[in-house]
Image (cartoon, rainbow, N blue to C red; front, side, top):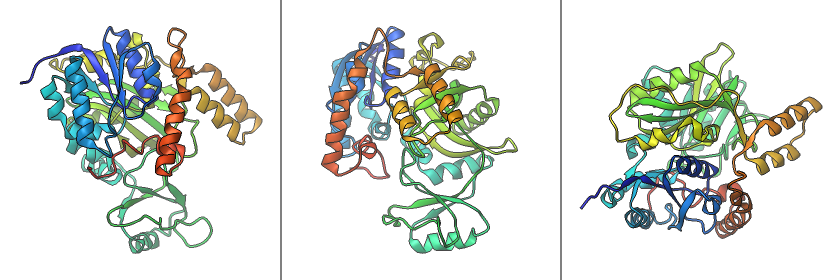
Length: 402
């Protein structure tokens, strides 16, 4: 029998992510009782004062049904009214949404088919094109022969991009020439019809990121930001809010066309002529959440998900707000070869940015990085993968369900 639980009790999943810690603090500041869970034994949110309770659950990628049952059990035990996913466990929760609802909680996420369509890097581009958006030329590559044929048709291009249809942090991405010779694109060893890749037109321009909360196709909270400092090609470690009306217009139009609900993030390239071209979509929490503060009242955007839609002011971060993952930003700067001007700009960005982990009234997550890092190192050793890959290996969705 389905029962209605207290909406002020919220469970945040994927709690290893800094975004989960941010959500825990934002919801706690909105007088919610916040619980967090993850398949790792140690994670930064576990040590936050914002968390009323923390649980370890089975790894969704290696036991999806057991994971869903554990989350549903926590929902029932603690009378949770809302589950907020933050990482790729969202796909597994959406698959077993009914179990959460039977336990008494709503899942703040869209239906699984919509999530998968946006997560797949080519399906997203095709979806955007179907709604009339200008998109980069993109092709599905399933074999080395497919790649050779596609590259031979694109020899007039200076550079192209090759990436897996399912990936994160720009892992395994190749950017190179379509023509034979030095720096050319090569067929990945794991390329196959069952593990396809996307060959995409390389777009010159400025990268723009967005993060939004949408309900029934309407954008209720939105941040556009620059992610200038990254680990390699992928994970951003510093985020600076932008006033970008064009990006908001794009997101509003897409969200309305798809009738989306949940958290949605896009990566764009803004071409020299001002055109915005979508590169990929993440239908989940991303680093854009770090640009919001309790006074922005973003918690209301998810807590009022059951209320009838009505016109209200867009929730947006204050202009000029910046945030960073402090230790990662420092490590990034130490590894990069920078000119004097670039180093000066980087130090200014570091000084102006709020660290996403540290709060004077909630300092323990900073120290919690030590056991959290050890847990990831152990996971990486278990699966024989580097640290970055280990950070998602047990919860990512790559088109399968086990």
